[in-house]
Image (cartoon, rainbow, N blue to C red; front, side, top):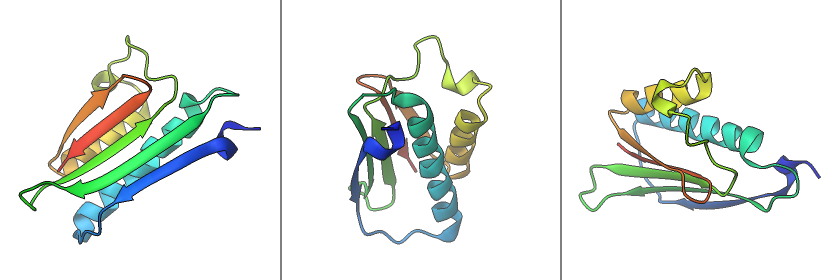
Length: 116
């Protein structure tokens, strides 16, 4: 079994209306994070799970994207903000385009929280 065929995907997507200039970068971010997880996070035989959540904050003005996988995680010595990885650089650049902030969680896999 290859890793991609055994991934459980959990979605919690609130019905939101977003402008195109937010929807496109957001879609690219989720695509890049998913690609990275499928490519790197799940060695053979691992129970694989990806969860994606998109909700609005209480103020109704801000949105929160939470992407999490239960994979092997980003190594501690890797600083994603200074990475030479095109994918990680793209995630941070697109978050900036959304005028958002990004938080990395390395516990039990890899998790990103983007508030924009």
